[in-house]
Length: 542
Image (cartoon, rainbow, N blue to C red; front, side, top):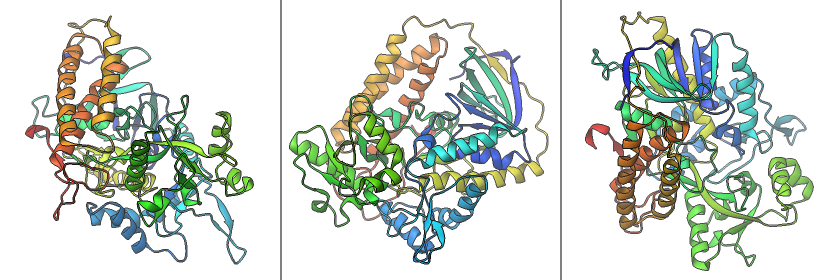
């Protein structure tokens, strides 16, 4: 739904508009900027996003006893039969060169002396991996990557960074009754001046991250609202596999720190999962115990909590020395200590929390979507890499590999790019709307959405729960559509509008899958289908 009138007077232009300033968006911007003018939008602080909080690291084959085939095999096994094998091979075959690029721009991955006394990268191991292959910067890898990329982008003459800008809607030739179906620009809300502006671009890339904020409990920051998925859906792109929401098994259970993630590397280095009585339970569920894939570990924790009627389970690494813990997990140690938990002597209370969207906007190996000129990179996408469950530390890898592939394709397109025909984009029309005097309605709907998504579309699902969730979300959509038509936009309204849209896609995707596989577990369909395919939704069919 557009609110348009007349011709825009506040209009920016660029070669490439990138929506999102995490690892995917900034890697793309830096690769493009030598040959193109780039605008990067960030709806919050430029550094605020899931990348900043990523602790574990990036998976890549560096160990002598490791192989590309082994990494590929681990990814496919973890993906529970739904990975696109070509996408898996493409990503992992380009992993090392992508890591070398990060190293070249200043990422100092941890090192150690090998058995021969030579310096080598310190590699850790996480759930689902058969070898140590996780490059990391202590337990704050994402922070190192985000701050380094941002410092490079900030000083580049061809990159304009806009902080406090929400993308409201994409503008395509089809929507303006022009030939073909090409992206032309976007309406963006300037939060600082509280007005909608227009950006015209030859190419647009969505790098907005996932949609875990649709759930009541999540490890993600507040910005993870599925914005890019909703933008692409409204413009006509196909969306795939949104029923596969990864719940990280170990989020700190604490009244003032519910969003603090406890890195999987803790379990990779030997931490145990315990019941309140101090007994281990993961060996009862899987031979890999604490190093089983995340879907298995999260369901096991959920099962034990419900069986025992308790609020949390516990993660324990007290059998390791304090020196080891502080050296390898300084961020986790300091954060927990501030909350009164000394992880060198105490078990850590944990619960699963929504963490990662394994589905998203369908793209090819160049990052292209269904709309000409529109690309997408990172967690916002469905590449086929993750299948029904993401292998730990493949997410940042996907961001960088596909950012580089996307940059190469856009750069080639720009070399042969012919000037667009002159066209006029209607400006945003606010003549028929007013300021809202009922922001409490938005907050109420926001909390209702996140609560019923947690209760009905969480770790364990049923047909009845999904039907109830669909009914509730469609009622909310009607309310929000009416609200959006009558009031001026705001950050809360734009995010709620997108979250409700993405919630409907998640629910419909879950209803369409008549089996249990990977991250999607439905009590009414407990078995896997013999022949399973990705769930693909198209707006025109809904």
